[in-house]
Image (cartoon, rainbow, N blue to C red; front, side):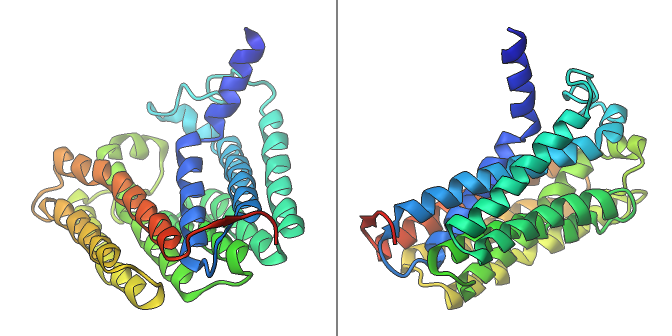
Amino acid sequence: MAARSRLSDYIELSKPTISALIVAVAAAGYFVALSGPVNLRSLLLLLGLGALGSAGAAMLNHYLDRDLDERMHRTQDRPLPGHRIDPPSRVLGVGLTLSAVSVGGAALLLNPLTGLSILLGTLSYVVVYTLWLKRRSSWNIVLGGAAGSAPALAGSAAAVGHWTTGALALALVVFLWTPPHFWSLALLLREDYRRAGLPMLPRMEDPAFSAKVVVVSAALLVPASALLLFTAPLLPAVAIAVVVLAVLFTALTIPLWRSPARRWARLGFVFSGPYLLALLILLVANGYVLHPGLRWGF
């Protein structure tokens, strides 16, 4: 029972929902760059090693933020602030090991650029976001959003050995999606973030201004999504759906321009996840329809 509980704690520390989204971004990057039948070996290695890298980075984030988690109601029951794993250095060791296996395995079993892409994502999340910016600047989510973009580049590198323009456009979309997603959450939890001393909004003392920034940042997804139409081979129906999704996401945030009310912040936050997931599913399906077939090995 104790071993099962410990395992569940480590699974929680891996942030499985976020890791699944990271893997989905990598898969979309792979299929956007795809130039022939799916290579099952490279795809499965990408997804497996990407999941390990995301889990490792999440554990490092938990380890470094354990003092902050103790001060926030939302995070007080996590395994480290709840003292269910002792000493915390165990989490540090597992996180470093998973990250090293992910980066090294991708470089050796796929190609060096895939390993570099995963490494860039890990460094963006752990060093740029968690260590450098999170406690110091409201720009933390903006620059830290590069961590979510890196899997698209890793997917492209695994598929064709380089970063395609379509994968770069997808990386830009994910990069621009991150601020309205997390700022909507921060509007909902601004008292909790204030208690922890974290500048998670453009202006913590001015929710109305921050809410307007959410709308503007969401609106940037429309031209970024349109860029996919010119850089990636998309079926007509997929191209239309990609832009419509971005417009719908923006439209759902517009009430925040008039009022930073919690119900409007919740609406934008709740839709942001399904928006990105739907986009990624469309891109994966599009890539397979354009390049049908499966093969194993190079």
